[in-house]
Length: 290
Length: 274
Image 1 (cartoon, chains in turn purple, orange):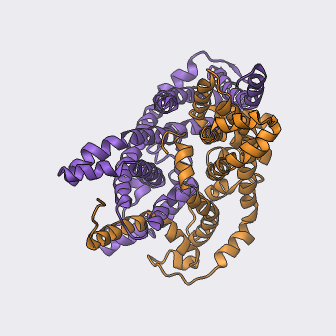
Image 2 (cartoon, one colour; image 1 turned 180 degrees about the vertical axis):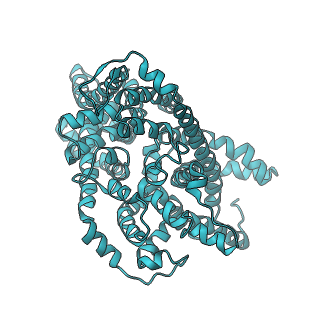
Image 3 (cartoon, chains in turn blue, brown; image 1 turned 30 degrees about the vertical axis):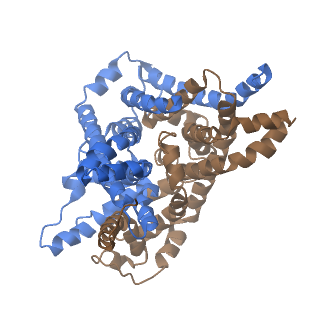
């Protein structure tokens, strides 16, 4: 019974959240756009002038820009590959009849709750350190030379850390989807003589496809913004070897004090994120219609 | 016919699952073990048996004033969550119970604000914060965390509220219940579990937020994320202390997280996977 009264009330109740988010979305973005056309360095704030497209040309023709875009892609795709495949495997494993399933679940999802700086520092110092890390101890045990992970494979090392943080998320969502699979269907397939492999390919995987899509899209949104893990491990180096787009903008704006250049970089980050967002919105939007 | 499970295969799967689970959990466990070692022990090579000292926990407090960033984390995560709920509960309530043609669009638009990369607005936010004197203040950061998590809070509440049958509200209205009574006696008891779940998940998200908390603080308002990140400089002999600080930083949220597995799936997939 939607009378005019309740409609007005509904609008009033919605207004604060909508207005706050609208301001939050419009004002900073408009400012970023504005700054991207200005010569503005925080070290010389008195010399602000119109720059035209200089910041864009400057930022987008910098070799570091292409390196950072490439690193962003490798980082996102690498983590997605590990977490999706690993997540499916672990979800299938936990879904088996096992002793102590609850505790196994808790152990597996725990890394997700570890704040990024802690996760990165534990891995950097206690696991991957070339002198005292556990991996170095393992290497020495087998008579091999310990690897200096962050010097030799900086981006790969960060991928490992980030994948460790996100593997629980993928596992948990895929497990939830897996457990909603109708067990009668599984039994029917079994009775019809389908082996485990065929059951997985023709029954389980199609059932998981929606959850996999959601995992990929949501993780991508977060993975495009990876920052703290890079800050506390490699600080983007050596050179720009582990600098992603987020970190490059941070370097330009905060370490280089270049407001205009950082803003121009920010605009492309928005464009990139929007491309992903459009796909995610479609996937989520479908769910609303049902 | 139930699937027949032989005892042998169950034991086999159990061993495999536990090995994988312990490997994944190992870094956390090892940090905890290291926190109970002395500094020389911490770099003396692989060992799962610490000498069992608690001095690192004491040292972290006495030398680095651990309690201050810890309290900042508590205040920021709880404060921003409550603030977000104040905005989100009325909005989600009206969207769930008085939906209009535009409700879906508004929800999708709110979700889209969450997709904006933080770094894209780093410069304006930093300059605004500086000009308004909000840098390194709890107030500024609380507002920030509220804004970035508000879309998720609205969405989660919406998916919970939508499951409350509207007929119950109509029945209450028929019986002459006023709006106030409707909210207090009918809606609240049914909505509390959803609100509690949302609260829990949002505290976890705010506690672990590591972009704005690092960018906008230095010392006064720095929560644990910024505090721990300040340990990143390459000094050699501090791993046991770092481990103690890390253990204390993650333990409360780890325990909260264990209780919120279901809500986590729901909240972070915006209801797309349940």
